[in-house]
Length: 138
Image (cartoon, rainbow, N blue to C red; front, top):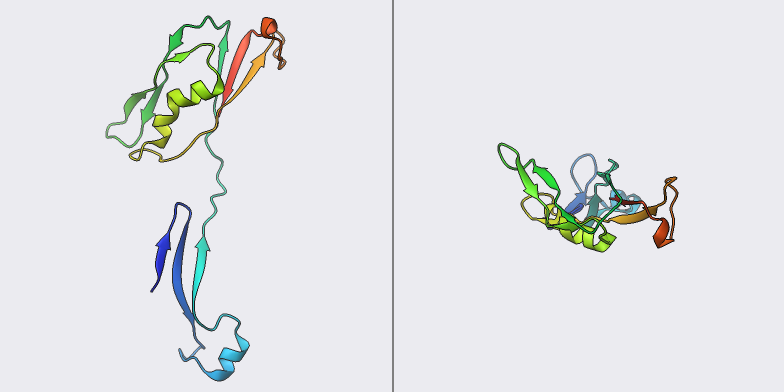
């Protein structure tokens, strides 16, 4: 049997036979997948991915860290991010927390972080002087 796999699929070797377990000429002529073949079996996870939002109001450039709980340890233990400035870019924020998601012993995953700059009314703004809140979303 041929076997191969990836993070979301496996390849398996299959052989189609008639109901008696025999590959007969009449069955071979009527079944499009008769004989040996490599088929891909893919499992798509319809579940919703984790999503979170962190809002920093009146950022002053100071640093903070985020504590995540690591469910893979017994008992669950905290994992602390690298230092994050309150005025960090989305890339800097992602870099500070990426290890929690990408570590082989935890999730072995990647994340996407977006940054929205909000004014006093909570509307997205591109005017630096109007920014009151920084919203990071993953």
